[in-house]
Amino acid sequence: QVRLQESGGGLVQTGGSLRLSCAYSGTTSAIATMAWYRQAPGKQRDLVARITFGGDTNYGDSAKGRFLISRDSAKNTMSLQMTGLRPEDTAVYYCHARADPVAPLFGTEYWGKGTLVTVSS
Image 1 (spheres, rainbow, N blue to C red):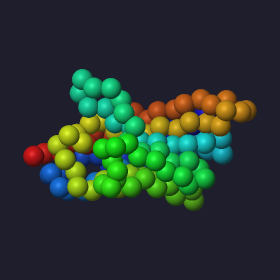
Image 2 (image 1 turned 90 degrees about the vertical axis):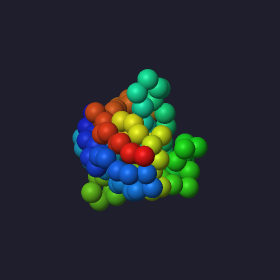
Image 3 (image 1 turned 180 degrees about the horizontal axis):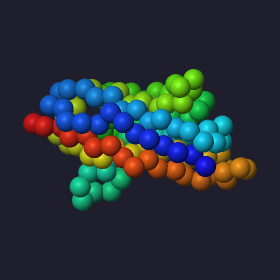
Image 4 (image 1 turned 90 degrees about the horizontal axis):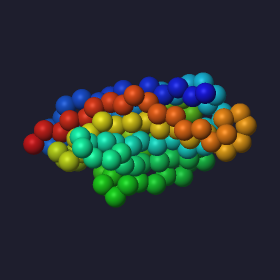
């Protein structure tokens, strides 16, 4: 299995920056993609950014041009650098991992517990 632990959330003013990190462990060789999702109160969980272990990235519309996803394979961490934060970015941010659709994890998805980001106006 894969274990995920987010860190780096907090309170920031509009226009500020934050860096979220996700430490991953376990059967890391089986991971195909990792991503950040976010969920605001009363809303669905949405994709923020995704990175494949081959290095390809894609972003949700709200993150394009402001957020940058990266991964450090030596440290088993994935990060999300957020700049130009807005009150509408306020949400719980979740780390996500999806395994390769083959043994040993057969495409299983994993979630962290989330970290709260609050952007004040």
